[in-house]
Image 1 (cartoon, one colour):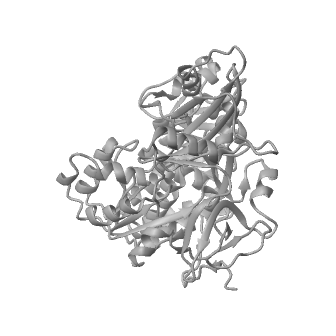
Image 2 (cartoon, rainbow, N blue to C red):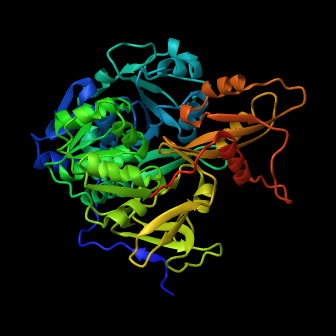
Image 3 (cartoon, rainbow, N blue to C red):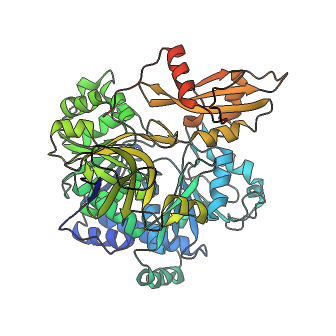
Length: 561
């Protein structure tokens, strides 16, 4: 038997370095080169300027009596301050906690309390989300608190709220004041902390939805994400001359690891077209900044290709990039290569818990491999496919994909039980994805052990939504599952059985969801039913519900790469 096991080899060793040191090295190599362009903020920073900004903000954070190991949340769309905060927290040994900009009240409260955030850097608002209003709902004590002395009943660990923008707000620090740098004592403290930091130290927490209903805080180290950014960019042939357009969110590994840290590894320029994805601003940024690379989930590329003015943009500077986060429709891949001048576009596969990338196609892979697989294993990473008994399957057979190596997270924050469920005694991360490996080591993802929904690159676990809907008066039972969608890949559908005499309608369910959970988790389709299809042992048969909805709505399953 030819076992479905691969080990990524490389002549390039792993970096034993902290993120703060990595920024310093790049700033010394390319001090005057453009590091960061935030077009929507009209901000341009060289590597030397970014390095200095990280230092002063790090000192400012220490001046707030924050200590290495404290958790600092960031709740913001893509802004230059996000990147500065990412480097500043790493340099001060503070653990950055990524808070999804789409989070609503219940999710925000859970995330901040689960990891014990002591400080929160927050935007004032994003589109219809008023972040400060939501914070004041959770912590009305802000209205009368002295900045840095918040004592909230619902957010007991939170002391500091740092707001982005020029306005002052009751109980909050202004980012600009903190970013101006701390007193001499704080700067001396920062200088003393640097040599004590180790690459294996936890430095970032990213929340992933969980099948038990509550998000899990994947805890990642400098070593995890710095190396993953390096090898993801290396596979695209990045140099200091590349300019990467980053419309994907910074709160996600796609933005902050593959984007920011990938550029940092090579001195490439980060270009942020907008605070949130808009196809027109991406096309503008690529054309005007002469970007050589572009990142996105398939939904983003589809929106760009289908923009009514697409033909008016000169995208000839593009060469490479990454499409990831959801299955890539084959025809979309071909259009990106042809119409967006991205012959070297790559496909990536991974998960937050693996920093995130474990598989990536090469820029010179045969076309059929680049549109039908997720490529081959990354350097310094092991992967095996196993059956239900934990034995490695043969190449060509289907098995669960398991990953081992430098990229595997340290664990789920304050959750040893779920960490043990995910990472076995031999160090293998069990992804829950079903895959097939061919004789050349290329892997195709063919399904999921669990019923996770992937909508436009966002991982959604039905159990989380189900447990939330159970809190709505009148709901007796609920089943949530995914149905195919031509734009997002999948949409959320919910079957609901009401209690006798309950008078809920679709509008009431949607209103209940929109106040508390992120927009992408709100069911797109709702059906009220009298019963659910079940096995003889009482297990829900969600595949039958999906089939029924596909037929009733006239949907089509999506052909994917």
